[in-house]
Length: 158
Image (cartoon, rainbow, N blue to C red; front, side):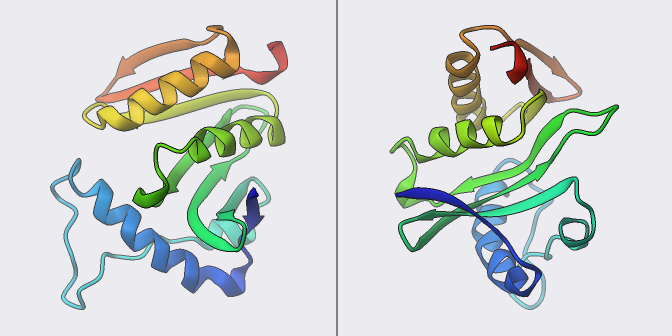
């Protein structure tokens, strides 16, 4: 069974560890990302995920196996729900797990959504375009601005 598990502050080291794989994958799209002298990528500052109720960190688990993570900013009065980071380990990609998790998130955080991908990350764009188009029955907007592709939609209108 595939599920989302809220990351607790005491599990930050585990999240930072799996994020190393994510940063490695992402480095092919952003050439300025490089390893530090210690052989690791710089860690993400995750403080807001423990201190702010609008930021949410989740592990993605298949049964008991950790297969990815998601970082979400939930909507406030003036801003939409956004997926800050979304990662499924390569051995599990293409099996529908990312789509299933995305749909769970859309239902968990109803309302207006804004999802962005950097323009040259074609696989992320293909994934999100397909998921959003299917989830919304084509009722979404997409645009390119400042090198980022964006899909916007409202789950309350579906």
